[in-house]
Length: 246
Image (spheres, helix red, strand yellow):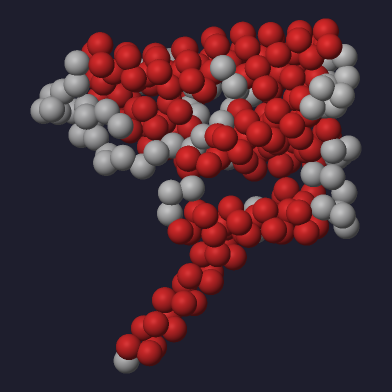
């Protein structure tokens, strides 16, 4: 699924500039519906990768983070080791833990609700919550986006999996490209800065370059090193610029 936007951090307490509840619900429903429909592509891709209907639906119910789900079934479809595929999906999903740190302060939900709310801490709910001007609007945005997306994502996953089982060989219909296409569509809006685009480009180069020489699923793990490599290069360039300025 898409990464969170980076709007200004809202004042969690203040009513100043409060946004009407109806407007928050409308925006949240728009995000939930738009992204939730892409679960169909996941259902098709998962069954095409060899997972059964029940396995596919359980992934969406229990994991519920689209990018990690696509990464897992993509690695399996390429013949990767299940443990390697799961590791790649896990590392991709760790970003949600950082979202949770910020949202725990913003939403301040009761302790008893936190385990359930944590399951909905994903890119879209984080983006909608952070875009709100106060805590009340953030809570509404989080709840409506999370509920809409969870229901639609799982429903369309089921429909996609049933459709894939009905038509048989997804490769023959070209539906094996549905997963990568959906993943790229989710990824593209996240690449807002030059640093993010550089990381994405380097990760693609590294992943594709290692694809012929490493087992399936491993190039994805190695491509994670693109982020620290780009940051290191930028740091070196800044240091060099400071040295010349002196």
